[in-house]
Amino acid sequence: RGYLYAGLEFGAECYCGHKIQASNASESECNMECKGERSNTCGGINRLSIYRLELAQESARRCKLEASPWIPAQPCHGGTSRAAGGVILTFLSQREDEQLCAHKCAAEEFESCGSAEFLLVYQTQVQDNRCMDRRFLPSRAKQLVALASFPGAGNTWARHLIELATGFYTGSYYFDGSLYNKGFKGERDHWRSGRTICIKTHESGQKEIESFDSAILLIRNPYKALMAEFNRKYGGHIGFAAHAHWKGKEWPEFVANYAPWWATHTLDWLRYGKKVLVVHFEDLKRDLFVQLQRMVALLGVTACEDRLLCVEGQKDGNFKRSGLRKLEYDPYTPEMRKTIGGYIRTVDAALKLRNLSGVPEDYYPR
Image (cartoon, rainbow, N blue to C red; front, side, top):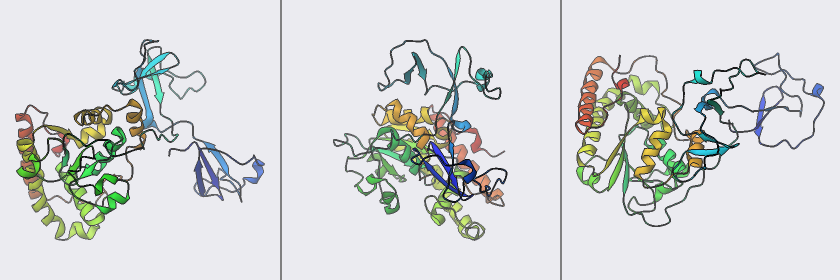
């Protein structure tokens, strides 16, 4: 992913890069069958079969409404437009129905080529590094902003997204050497240093909450958050707990201790927080641009569209699990689900009492 060329050698070895520096060889010298698909050749002895990666995966395709031509663009002034061939393309807007772009291309009958009103936009797989530079704030922050969440709710991933979108390091109420070594350079700073754009915290006491001037409160489905934190506790930040931990006494004890905290964490931040922006983890996954723009706005930073577009290609980084490992059974007993369901209803009511949208529907198991 992210490279322009892929080369295959010895029937199985794969190499990636942006440039081809060797001269062409005879095709007959690429004579080794691919290990996984013997009908094709995958290079030879000291010979590479080279493929150019021209189109990205399906997830990088978008159907967009074509704007009026020759409108001046303000690419880095809080706008979302970019001039291309005399036409302004609005990349960060809501995606359109794919069917509106379902007009066959003249030369490729199985590909869609948009229409007179709608453009089919592809994101290439060429590495986008426009959002990779990060630094500490040039001057001391005037406000302390918390990035608050219950453990397992995606705080590390959200920090990664914020750093990409703003170009500034995030800090932490704690210190995790493994995260520092993986690139979170603000991890080592004292949380009151004022050099970082926001501060990770799992704290939920009144005194700790009131020490921040504002907060982004990240909330996640408790069933998923509890499992994610259990995996972290017994498998590391991007690891997984062993089956023995799930089937032993550790899991029921963990749920009994942590499930009530999931609810009180949100309730405390809603009660004691001075200025709280609620972001649901599920919404962040589903609608990255909109939710990230909300978060960046609270941080008082104008994020360039170039950086936001770059985030899409770098969004997972090295700090997000590929997904919860599928267990052979449901780890939640009926008693656990009954208890957690009560906590969900309590949090939902508290959110609605403050004229906020309640918890997402998928919090309630069907």
